[in-house]
Image (cartoon, rainbow, N blue to C red):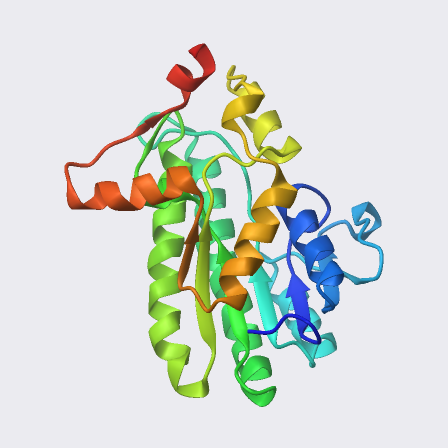
Length: 243
C-alpha cells in the first residue's frame, strides 16, 4: 500500500503509539482522521480530529458516516489495564475483551463497506506479541490480545474477496505513558532500555504495511512468534523490572 495519498482513520490518537502512528501517516503524505474519546486531547497537526469511542455502537456508526473516504483503518485504541484471569477483577477482564476484541470488531464491521467502496484498501490492527505468549501478572490482557489475533486472521479471510489487505502489528513493550502508567499501578517499573519509543514502532508498522506484510513484529515479537512451535511460555514482567 502506498501511504502517500491514502486516507487513514486512526483510533486512540491522544497519546502513545496511536499519536505516533497518526503523526507518521501525516508525514508520509496521508490524509488522517485522528480519533479519541476525548478529542480535545488530540494533538496531531495536519489531521482532522473526530470523537470516537470504539465500545459505543453509535459513536462507531457516526465516525463511519463522516469518514467515507477512508482506505486505511488503523485499529489502535484499546484499554490498557492490569489483571490476572484467575484472581483478577472480572469487570476489568470484561472491559479488556470489550475493548480489544469487540471494539476492534465493531470498527471492522463499520468500515469494511467503506473500504470496499474505496477500492479495498487496508486494515492495520495494533495487537501485542503477548498474543503469542502470556504475561505473569497480566494474563487477562494477553488473552484479550490472543482473541484479537484470531479476529484479525478471521477478517483477513473474509475481506480478501473485496481486496482489503488485513495486517497485524505486534510490538512488545511500547515506551508510552499508557503502558508505563498501567505497569506502575501494578507496582512494576521497567527500565528504559527494554521499552521501544512509539515513534520508532510507528515507522516499523507503516514500513511493514507498505511492504504488504501480514504480521509486523519487533525483535521480541519475532521471538514470541517462533516460540509457538514449542512449549507454551510466558513473559515475566517482574523479572524485567528486576533486571
